[in-house]
Image 1: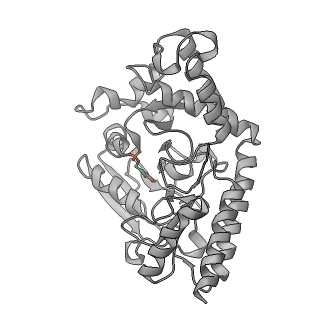
Image 2: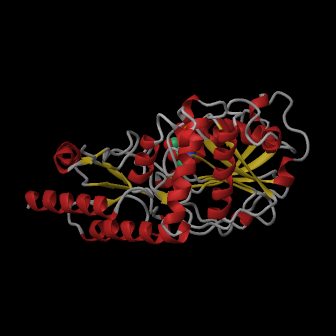
Image 3: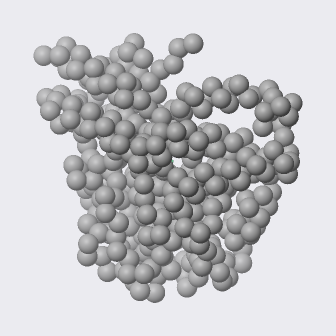
Length: 360
Ligand SMILES: Cc1ncc(COP(=O)(O)O)c(C=O)c1O
């Protein structure tokens, strides 16, 4: 067996012990004679899987009791529509546009109500997070929307906007479970799991219960009725059973890493290793504004497209995969999610050093 250091932005690397456990349980899940893939979502075994996953997630994130957790298919993109359908009760919302993902979410929401882009870093090519200190939010807005970690440009909010009581909705797809967050500061926290939590096919939503009250848009597909999904424990229909099982294994793994405090320490160590090298390199430059850098997605360039291409082409021989930047930005991007090891980041830095020395 030979595993590479996989820097993909998602679907992304998963912890080896989780994959090993899934492999060991593949044909016969804990003596029931079948795989989790093959069992009924109404079986006692699956009931235990989904309930344990939710309980472990609640423990890891210290989710207050007045929040519901739902597991939905369709990724985060589907919720770009589900969110306005469920929460635009008065018909308008404020969006902060800090990159491709918040821009897409705002554009989708326009189909369902009035969207005000109250701050944007488009003029800066999304290399930074807009200043959130002096935003004049509409006090009638149903919610304020942010993408807390922009996967493509590698920026993150190190400070949340003060929304003066308007519910804050945050897409945390590419920073899910990477560090502790105070859930009580949000109305909704949600994200696709295929970056930091599990295989593709699932979106986890954590919703403050009072936001589930009241009418939703009458044309909302029943699948996207969050209140119904919460009442049914995400079992209104057949959920993404196997993906939920895999996420559950990842939650157990995270608990064994010292929970979110423990994993955050390691994530900061990995990010520091990479940024320290980038900040001192004469060849490679990080592209995100220093104050807003993500510790999960690290885009960088040489400034010369041919050199970037040579670096990417040479990565394979060093056991490094998926280091090419997003097509909209170019250059390179290292996604260093929870399951990326310090050893993997060190291997990348060693290759960068070697490549840089060869140019001299
Ligand atoms: C921050 C963020 N939001 C939303 C999405 C869209 O997620 P999905 O592909 O699960 O719909 C992505 C995907 O990469 C993302 O990085």
